[in-house]
Length: 336
Image (cartoon, rainbow, N blue to C red; front, side, top):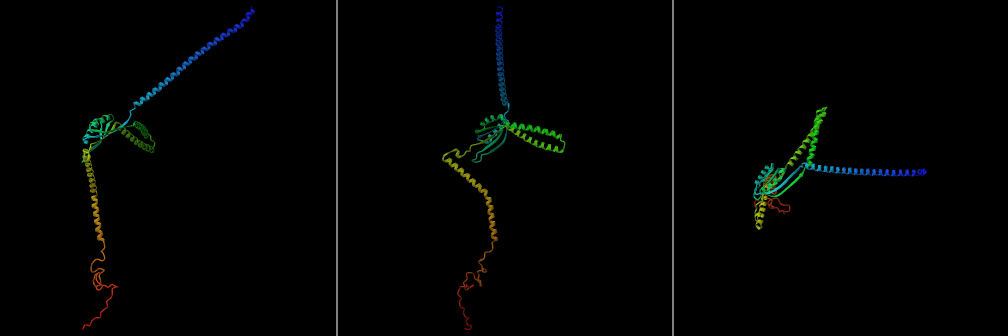
């Protein structure tokens, strides 16, 4: 008996150790799996939280950019042109000037031309209107005359304005530093050099400030150019057909005759001066011309030795060498 019990103790102890080992292994595996599951859950949550935070940050940045873009004041230069047809251009020009002054603007240029004959009257104005009153002013044009044409152009100069502001700020800082250096100049040469540099930069700064002021004034005050005309009342406009063509032809003929008369009037003084000069030249040439040889008279070179002319016969003047010589007669006795 004792020997059989001793024999069984070894296998039972080995079996017991194996069961305990398996149990411990199972417990440790379950603990590791739970830890891994917990760690995985925690890691996934952190990554999703980070992604959510990044997305929220991007959305906030985009929203801030849009808000900043919306809050920036855009600088717009507005220029408009309109054409009106009115019976009295001068009266329409006065009405437009009054409308501009009521809107807080001013008349920058104004010209009027009265009707002359067939040429109709007209007027033109250049108005400066506050930018926020431009639309209402354009609407008021219809109460002055018949609006036949209107156009509005806009130019965004925001970037140009920012560039001028940055350059002005940089030059202002530079000039301030140069003024400080002038106070600490060690020699006259250094002082003169600093003064020259300060003068150049101050001139550039003044030019930039003038450009900025002009740009700001163009943004604040829009430009409106208005042309006022009236339809010419002519025979061709009142009636057509043969009579209308006849009126147009007559108007063209009158215009041509007026042009010719104008040219003659311009050339007439010059023609008079040319005629006087021509007469003076003729008179001087006649005075300076030598006497013509062979003029009629007894002392001419064609006169013979007996005073005969060139038409005298051979017996009256010098005989020709080819003429026959008559025989000489002997003198008759005196007593016969």
